[in-house]
Image (cartoon, rainbow, N blue to C red; front, side):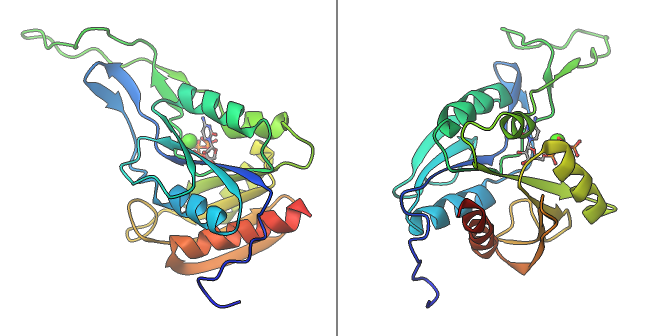
Length: 225
Ligand code: CTP
Ligand code: CA
C-alpha cells in the first residue's frame, strides 16, 4: 500500500493509549512532573484511528491538540491515570502505555501554598509509591487475548534492562528507547527496539514517531489474530 493510505486493519477494534506525563501536586501551585511531551502517544492514537480503530486517548497534561476522531480523557496524576486506564481498558482489544507515569508522589498534599520561613532550611519532601498500572493491567487482563504494550526509556545496558522490565511487567510488547540528546523527550523523532514476550525483537530505525507507532500497531495486529 502507498504511504498515507492506511489499511483499516484495526477496524472493529477498541484500543486505549495513554500519553503525556503525570503531575503529582505538592500544593495548589506546585507539582512533581517529567519531560514527556505526549508526542509518541498522540502519534499512536492518530495512526490507530487512521487504521480504523476506535481510540481512547488518556492524556496526562499534554499541550497537544485533540486528534480528530479520538475520544480524549484528560487526567493529571498517576492515580487518576490508573482509574481512567482501568475503565477504558475493560472492553479494549489493546492497551498501549506510552505515558510517563511518576513512580512516586508526595506523601502529603498541602491545601495551602507552602511558604518559606525566615532563617529555616526547607523540609525534605516525603514521597510514597504510585501504583504500577502496566503491571496491574497485565496481571489481570480485562479480556482474554488483550494485547498490552509498555514503553521504557533506558540508559546503560538498554536491551538487558528492557528484557528484564518486559518480564517484570508481564506485558506482551515493550518498546525500548535509549535516552539520548536528540531522542525521546520533546523530539519529533524516535528510535527503538520492540521486544516481544515471545522473544521477537524488532528494531525501528531513527525516524518520525509516526513510523514507530505504525510498527507498534503492526505487531499488535499480528497478536490480535
Ligand atoms: N508504568 C505504569 N505505572 C507506573 C510506572 C510505569 O504503568 N507507576 C508504565 C509506563 O507507562 C511504561 C512502563 O510502565 O509503559 C515502563 O515504565 P518505566 O518507568 O520504564 O518502568 P518502571 O517499572 O517504573 O522502572 P524504572 O524504575 O526504570 O523507572
Ligand atoms: Ca518509572
